[in-house]
Length: 242
Image 1 (cartoon, helix red, strand yellow):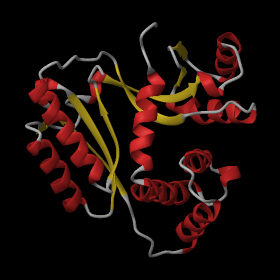
Image 2: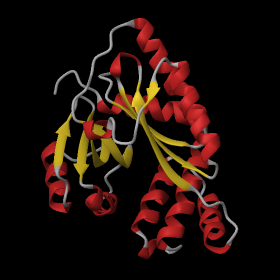
Image 3: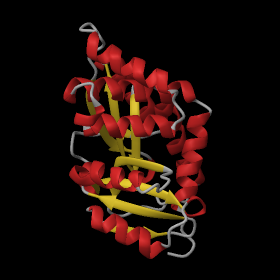
Image 4: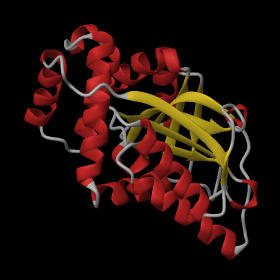
């Protein structure tokens, strides 16, 4: 896949997140609460919590902050009860957008998301209006510069662990799994010392759409920036061909 760079997009996103580490920690803190409430506070018996802890460490969240978050979620009966809400809609040029949120105030979140779409000349649709264009997959990105394994060795390790697909880009490798197999594959790679630039369950577009109009691109970026500013927004996925 010459000319394609998966890691560059991930790195750009991580650099932008690093500049807003406070929001990143808030997002991960909420994910810890949800994981503990759904599966308990012991990572040994809670694969989702293990995944969130790995994500927290990748974001350089201090261990004591992670531990405090787990203890608070396990012991505080009055801890915020967060709810997962997904919004779907269209940006300029018919670009499909999926917004995943984790909120303790549905009215505030709905207003923020609607405002972001509106100010970017987009529109929110009904549930399912664009999600059929995406596949939910576990996605692991490994930067070539950080990985000592050959492509063949990494591919065989991932496939043996249960991965569905393996893609090589100019600067990185992409490993795709079913959502159910994601934790097992991630943990296998972690135990083998494979450095992961990103590992999460994502919405992967089945096909991508090019957008060349500068005005439309500007409006789409405005929507994405406004969504990025909301602490309630966990993830945003589009089918834009970058």
